Image (tube, rainbow, N blue to C red; front, side):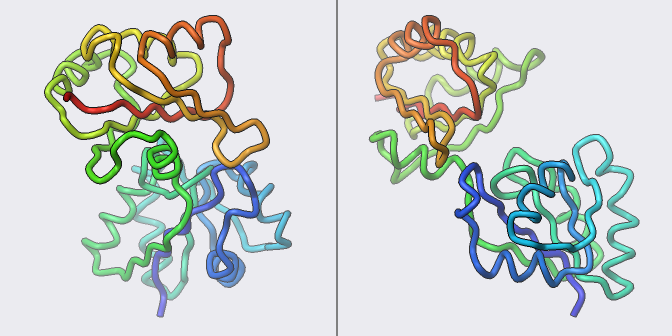
Length: 223
């Protein structure tokens, strides 16, 4: 039966993909990819030749109706993002919601996502946590951080290397400079790095050593 299948892809190491995910990518009629150039690296590595179509945050509003029509006509379509699980700070939510509205079967495979290994590796409590994703770059940023000042659960943020120090400093102002945290960078890759310490220590560390790559910030909750 035709359906939408959400397929997680490696966050760095190409070996971190399930056999089932590879089988689905190879057997689907079409793969929707956040960046087709990035997707080709993965597909070429595993000799998968399924047709690709671009599906990203700038075109998803316009394309979801036509995608649903393709599925309703009998096609099985796989959805991937550049890395990790679609819908988690990546395109995917709007299409999944529209498919559900149209009673199209949606299946989501388990697989890679950066937040879980970063959370567990931080050494901070992970029995209860809240995922905040990317903070707003400008409008609403201060309001979002302020709303978290009373949060007692461990907090998980995604961040750009260019805004890391700024974010650490802002979190230190709102949560206290001695609040425990961990910055995970380039997870699953050769240069993976996990630096633990207070927010002030991490800010100083990355001020002196500007970071590169994908970043996850883990911050302990209010004591």
